[in-house]
Amino acid sequence: MTNLEEWMNQHLLELNLTDEMDYENGFTRLSYSEEEKQAQQAFSRIAENLGLDVHYDRAGNVWADWKTDTEAPVVALGSHVDTVSSGGGYDGVAGVLTALAAIKLLKDEDYTPHKNISVICFASEESARFGVSTIGSKAVSGLLDKDDVADVEDAEGVTIKEAVESFGLSWDTIDQAEKGEKELESFLELHIEQGTQIENNGADIGIVRGVACPIRLQITAEGMANHTGTTPMHRRSDAFAAIAPLITFVEEQANQMNEEQDVPLVATVSTVHLHPNVMNVIPGQVELGIDIRSVDDTLKKELADRIEAFCRKIEAKRKIQVHVNTLVNNNSVFLDPNLQGKLAQVADQLQLNSMEMDSGAGHDVMNMAEKWPSGLLFIPCEEGISHHPKEYASNEDLAKGARVMAEYLKGETGEKP
Image 1 (tube, rainbow, N blue to C red):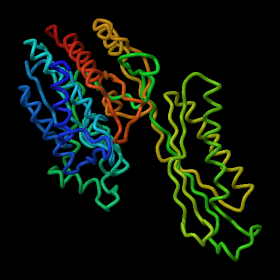
Image 2 (spheres, rainbow, N blue to C red):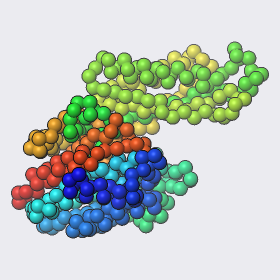
Image 3 (cartoon, rainbow, N blue to C red):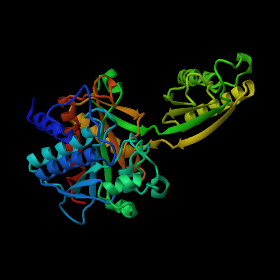
Image 4 (cartoon, one colour):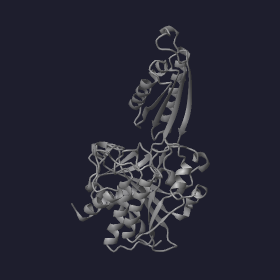
């Protein structure tokens, strides 16, 4: 193990608040929780030991700044340290760890940047607690609608506003975390791939072209609850039996569309709620949640339209009503081509095999890209496993990511602005 890999392994443990990686139980650091705060404090300690100036903003993001000139532009890197419940120790953490390691590499070389560099540890990236993702980076980029999300509750009935304030912040001033367009020059995030494209193609690094933001549908089938033992089969209005064919329809249509065109699309019926959900009562109401993703927004809409039409057929055929509600319809985000080109050149310099790819998962970079030229690097994660205790990225791959980021920073900050 190289010195860099040893340093990264040590601080990987520190950021995960552990003495050894737990590949059985994983880690739980939910948004605006005490565990997330402790991981942020670990980030702060590592950054301060590297000689960086650390401060929190009004949304609870932590900024670690290498300041050389108050008038110079700021080149930013970063990711997050919160997790899903019983998640892995690399999703998010890999991004802040490699960014700090890149700073270490430059400091060890006695490198002097001619621009300021900031490493950002964003708050509340995951949606696991509230169903609302990337709160910290939304605040920085001016995309947070605080009135819209203030009263969203977690499973314990705690609202986002209450959680933020228990974190030591003021909800009234959270939007003051927003940065002006001229306050940052660019942003780069590194993340584990959460898939197997890099592995499958024998590459070292993925350079992301676009982020596939979702269309999310809530399908509500309304039948009539009745006694399972006394209601004849021909007299039933079973909402679950009626809507069940939609589940296989979604899978079949997504597969068919992928055979017809080159840009991939994925679709999942990922939540089911039965009412009253009692053994001796015919289901009177069923809610299905459907997640549709592709970087091609027209494909997402086409599948959503097909689902709507199929629901109308079910409604006409069966004794139920079907309501289709669009919960989310976000356009996909395409990242800065110029920055992608720079990353590809750096990978070539380091004799690393890079590949262009898209991201099926959302990341903080998708918000930052709305305001600043932004890029996303992927490193492999074993067998594509993520959001699971067995999530794993090797020290070697983490070190490759750090070296790419360090060389990228040299290119961005090596000449006087």
